[in-house]
Amino acid sequence: MSLARYACDPARSRGRRHPEEAAPTRTEYQRDRDRIVHSTAFRRLVYKTQVFLNHEGDLFRTRLTHSLEVAQLARSIARALELNEDLVEAIALAHDLGHTPFGHAGQDALNDCMSAHGGFEHNLQSLRVVDELEERYPRYDGLNLTFETREGVLKHCSRANAQRIEQGEPGGVARRFLDRTQPSLEAQLCNLADEIAYNAHDIDDGVRSGLITMEQLEAVPLFEDYRRVTLQEFPGLQGRRLLYECIRRMLSAQVYDVIDATRGALKAAAPSTADDARRCAPIVKFSDAMAARSSALKAFLLNNLYRHPQVLATTGQAKDVVRELFGAYVEQPAQMPPDFAARPNVARAVADYIAGMTDRFAAREHERLTGRRLLA
Ligand code: MG
Image (tube, rainbow, N blue to C red; front, side, top):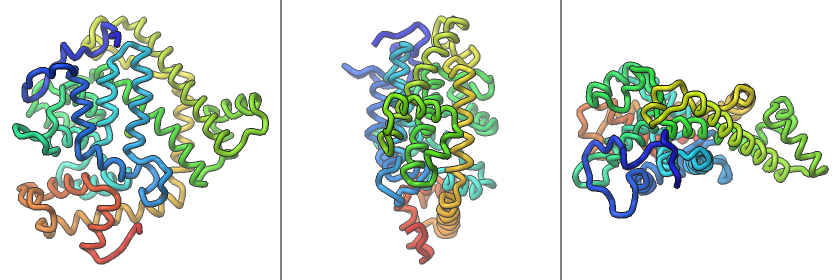
């Protein structure tokens, strides 16, 4: 792996919160990746909703397959730009560890429940998972990841939370939200790879579920242009092969666009180190033309898929499950496992417990505690 001078170099990592000896054969970022893959939260991603609730079908993306797709895209781009592939892989695999069951519906409901207790942000929760909630090692809570992986995991953060984190960890991962600087190029890349991944797989899942049609997608230039050239090359191609070929071409175009646009920005900003790159304006990006096309696609998915009446009907039930679970545990903390029930901050303990659940466990717990069966 050849590293550019502006890439994160594991030999110059800002280190772990609890110092550890180096591993004999693996770099610090490889170790981070391995710890993430072996974590409990990572295994649970397979039963967590991306857009479609887990019980709606076996062929739709879950948070796990989404995370793997983000890692694949980010690694391809990282290699071309000589960024650190191990670091982008670690960040990509960890970026959604803090997601609640039932996707954004679950998160919104939990954030409402927590409004008087500091709120709930899924990016911050991902950091809590790797910093505190995983219990695997004898000497510390969490996975004790490097600064650079943790920095990438904390993708967004409110100012209030940034100030709170900064107090406990001066100059740490929240500092950039107060200084308004950027994260590493590897972290910037993972953000964009996340967007590229879900735009593509939500079209795929949306069409295969029947909630959106290829005809509707004619209004989306980023998709339609590739459909047209695909049909010129393969007249008569239809169904899922046509869909996959359009998505494949659309993904490639975005990957090459990011590589070209980012090379241009690197040339202009000429950062000489990873820290230098953090002080520049965002460097990893789409060209302006691709950014506009990607936004148009996002708007289409929002209006036609995420707000589709059938999706909204299940998300309404998902919110009820989370709200009622929250109420039940706050009233009777002993219904949670003892280590959660014993925590002094009841609301945060309940939020952590619910956030860690898979979709189906949450639905089962809800039925056990309320006698009502939703989402089954
Ligand atoms: Mg994601």
